[in-house]
Length: 116
Image (cartoon, rainbow, N blue to C red):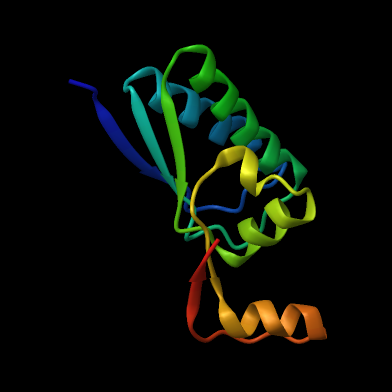
């Protein structure tokens, strides 16, 4: 039976928190076969945060483990979209229908959700 673990990131995923978050995620991955990372509380994310998620996913693949990203915050969704990396992680992402429309029109607001 595969062991599962869920963890959440409650701080910004920026260069300032990168070292601690990297170690936390790699330790969590070492203790399970399936790791679910809740990103709902991430209010800011930069390239360092993306690199941590990429590293965690790569290490999981090397060890025949599974990493899932869940509850993507707006900051996470925007960065994954900017770098066109959502498909690499392969997790369903909920975006707000009005946000999707607003982004294409240069506006921002939240309403009904869609899965991508």
